[in-house]
Image (cartoon, rainbow, N blue to C red; front, side, top):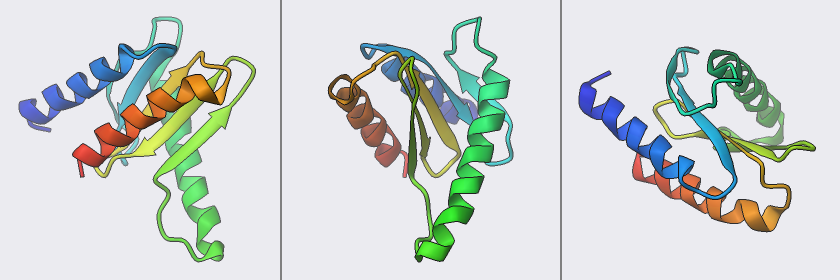
Length: 120
């Protein structure tokens, strides 16, 4: 990966980190390699990247019988908040939040959508 691309990814992560409720983000290549992250120290970014890639691959397989061809976003909700896995064409962007209601998640989702559409 060229330095300019890496800098763009770090900038993208920085933009997300500034959003209310965002705990951290990571970028993982489709090959499973963690490229960059802003996860707090108590979260293992490599493990998050591994499982996000696995979830994306499984979702990709699941939608085929439905007649769909590509998963762009997966939104997971748990007691602590939301995790969004977004395919931006060059890999996966994983963002975890402490937002517990969808109204507070909407601005983060809009930002993710804008960031990934800019990179296509």
